Amino acid sequence: MTDKKRCFAVLTGGGDCPGLNAVIRAVVKTFLQNGCDVYGVHNGFNGLVNDNLQKMDYASVSGILPRGGTILGTTNRDNPFKFAIEQEDGSIIYKDMREKVLENLRKYDIEALVVIGGDGSLNIGAQLARECGIKVVGCPKTIDNDLPCTERTFGFDTAMAMATEALDRLHTTAESHHRVMVLEVMGRYAGWIALHSGIAGGADVILLPEIPYQLDSVIAKIEQRKAAGKNFSIIVAAEGAKPEGGEMSVARLVKGSFEPIRLGGIGEKVANAIEERTGIESRCTVLGYLQRGGSPSAFDRVLSTRYGVAAAEACLRGEYNVMVSLYHDQIVTVYIQKAAAKPRQVPVDSEIIRTGRQLGICFGD
Ligand code: F6P
Image (cartoon, rainbow, N blue to C red; front, side, top):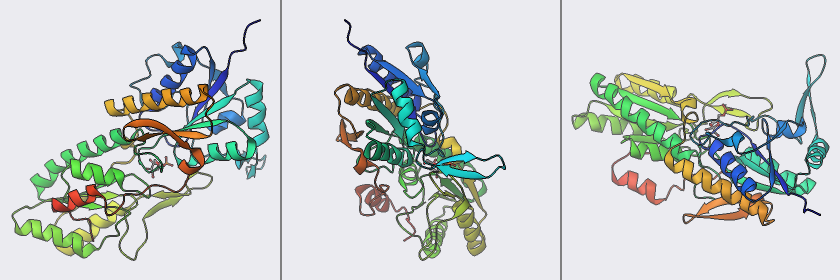
């Protein structure tokens, strides 16, 4: 009599992010190398509800290491506990589909699920573990780098490099036209991308959600540079930056998404206000989804691969309801419930903020 093969599944949830394919590849290869079966779930939790699973083999993950996006597809809308179902009249009702998830996992005899996602997907993973007894291992994905219990999420390094390149390019126009150039970057409620790219790209002003800004300080910095013979300035604004006593800029409200608010517009506001107050031509560039697309950096490929192998290894040794995480350059595991807690912001008294201040960077305070 032969031993029954162990069987696992992997899904990607939330916004796409450089390194997703590298994680999928590492997860699948590790399971296959250890004699297990592995299914890829299409389109995040939607595929678990709608039975959209694909058995993976070496060929399914061949050549995907440098590719952006996710070969499995993703969505930041489908939550099995509040699943949107369209009615005949076009209206939407929300249903709890946890039984469907359990049924499909049983159908393929899946022992545990690797959830590659940000806080929305990890929260769902944690709820599946808590309320349905599903065995889950999380893997921290997001360009925003804002997940607690890990020092790094994969995707951040690539996004930061993209934003840095954008700043290098904006310098050219800023210098030639004697303009103020504002770059709006992503990051939701955390300023990691803005802070790191701002330092790497030599920004003069960095506006973060963690430090509400005063327009007067920003203008004082620009005027001070002008007085010193610098006729241009470079500003990085995190999409979640806000003025002191004011609110974040909301581009629109989104129904049915993990994230009900789409941030955006702060860069344009800041550029307009500067031009009005100083008379210096000011322009805004919104970097947007360019930060999320394309090939992962070498750092992200390595981190994603380490996370993928570690997530599969956790499953193999039966260590469940954890997230793999980076701690002092080692991959460790932390309880998924803890990892799915509130976003990790930039500590305002951190060494990297102090570094920026020592360089004379204005943080708007
Ligand atoms: O979390 C990643 C992220 O790109 C954020 O930086 C941004 O606010 C958000 O996703 C945008 O999400 P969507 O894909 O819904 O526009």
